View 1 (cartoon, rainbow, N blue to C red):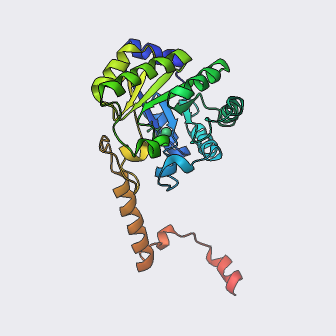
View 2: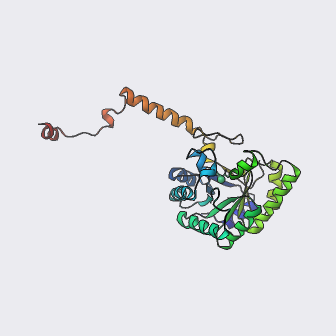
View 3: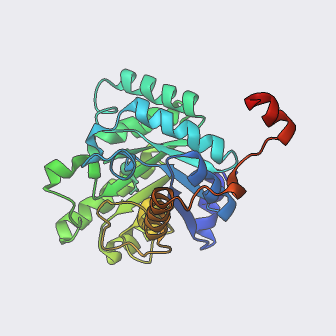
Length: 275
Ligand code: KIV
Ligand code: NA
């Protein structure tokens, strides 16, 4: 398993860091086998797996439940778990308790929190308590309601300056990496140059130190909206659709199962059974 020190070194040496989200055992197993550097149990869980319209209904218990499965599937991969909406904005000691519970129950390697400003002390508190923190700047899905939707952030000089300042603040507070979501590529380049810790981009251009994509987006698996910045690396959804349709048709028509897929009994036993 890679460590936060190794991620710093990878940045230093210009080696890209690969992160993918996962929410269950098979996805984690596939991801570890593929050699990804980090797995994020994102609260995108709410949309791609649980069928919610936003991340806002995901709970700490949801995150713990899925993270445990991911850990079972990827025992040797650095796992980051999202703290869900509302779980780190209250009393700081309560917040730390929640964080400790999430770390202990999931056996994760780090937690991720969105934002700077009032989140900076949270990052500091966790880090001081021994919990590695991944920060998240730019588009903050948990604040989509306040931001007025899922929009590109940091497009004006003023917003860009603020984001650079925030990035430096979260680094100073102890963050071990920072996710940059949906910002102009020039801003990603500037932030990546100014920080010692790695930047992990999503919809943030080519200059981030690493990349993250949502499992169901990059594999085109599901019925959810897929953002514009995603590349389809496979079309799993089409295969699933074909498979389930074929199965349905085969059962209806009697083409499945056949004798070949059946268990048999010896003639003598049959005679005993039916006389
Ligand atoms: O929840 C998530 O999947 C994320 C990534 C998009 C960075 O936070
Ligand atoms: Na998230």
